Length: 135
Image 1 (cartoon, rainbow, N blue to C red):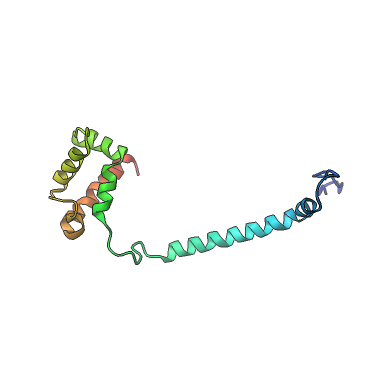
Image 2: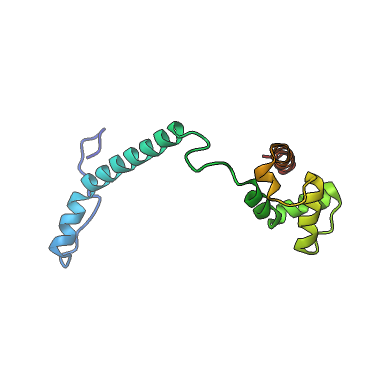
């Protein structure tokens, strides 16, 4: 119904061959959509509350900086950063790993998880990379 004129305007024409089930579905569509929107609102409310209530370092234990470093070394944008800011030839994975270990002053990436100073250097290095990316 038009709110201004009060005139009723059809929004759908149901074809005579439409099945009874489809016709009932069409009739109930507004109620079903409203129920769907309520379910989505509740789901998003729960997601937001769980994200704000959960600490940044939940019960997963300490961060695995070595794994994080390994994943980052395989990314193209990180390799571009190494080329542009550290003059590295990223022709192969071994050069990338060696250069990153050299920059971080570590013998193995495992030290990032056991040596607090190495972890701090990694966080600083990662922060400089993110700044270079514009994050």
